[in-house]
Length: 167
Ligand SMILES: CC(C)(COP(=O)(O)OP(=O)(O)OC[C@H]1O[C@@H](n2cnc3c(N)ncnc32)[C@H](O)[C@@H]1OP(=O)(O)O)[C@@H](O)C(=O)NCCC(=O)NCCS
Image (cartoon, rainbow, N blue to C red; front, top):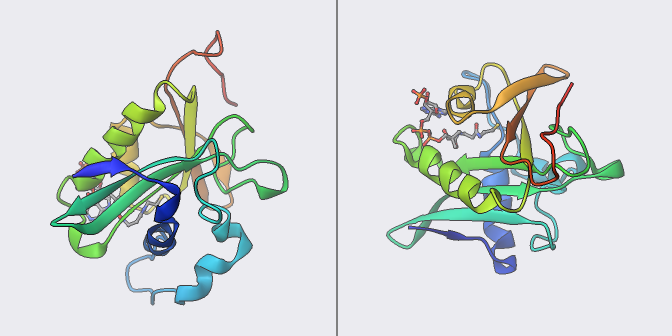
């Protein structure tokens, strides 16, 4: 089952934010409190603001994963910032739910919900993260780099009157 996130879901998003951190094969997992660092906490803290939008996947009543969008602007801009209108995507499943199509379903559901709200969404992904294939398959295109990570954008609609062109 996939449902929309509500403001009451902030606690589960902290866990999903931790799960969203890409750990290269052979590397130890980061400490749990890494998500409290400002560059990460901004993706979740105070969840339920006007422009926040997300979905959660439940299996047998338990949280399996979540995908969410948040606009991060000014001093709070995120790793995948392209402009102040475009929200950034975060997505993660708990490890035992990965690699079986659930991420595709979760992200597809979120994109449906986002289609009438945002003209585009962006993300930042490590080039060695297998999630890159998922993003490309769903239509995200690379528009630049931020350090070692790729910035990708998916154009959803031309609701602002013209398609945004990214550098
Ligand atoms: C990214 C993630 C949400 C994808 O969900 P998923 O259910 O594992 O992916 P799916 O089964 O729908 O497969 C979609 C694609 O994702 C790829 N993929 C991404 N991460 C994968 C993983 N950990 N294990 C297996 N496949 C993975 C697959 O190669 C597949 O590509 P293909 O269809 O071209 O073969 C999930 O793997 C995850 O939580 N990963 C860890 C957190 C993360 O990296 N988040 C993204 C940060 S940018």
